[in-house]
Image (cartoon, rainbow, N blue to C red; front, side):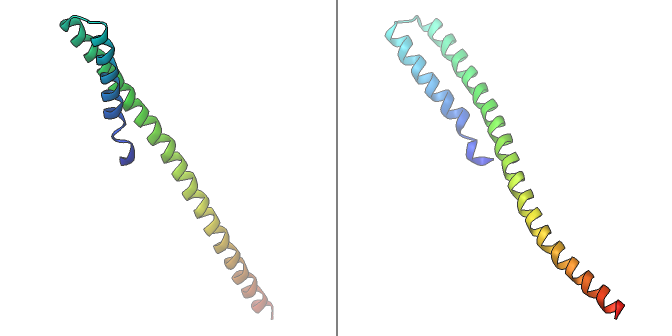
Length: 95
């Protein structure tokens, strides 16, 4: 679903910002700062992709269940009309 596509980017940017602020406060060296930042951002991007996969699966299943319930309700209404027609036909044949 398209409504969840920005989650990995937002998670990555927020995690990168928080990590950067913490490492600036603690005065990390530049090389250590960059490697840590890359690792954190990659990890949170992967976590965001997994989160999208899970959310899409949950909402897809929920949407399919709602559609199935609607179809069942429509089918039940059609069956009752068909059974009435069948009963009427049988009565006509008997007469």
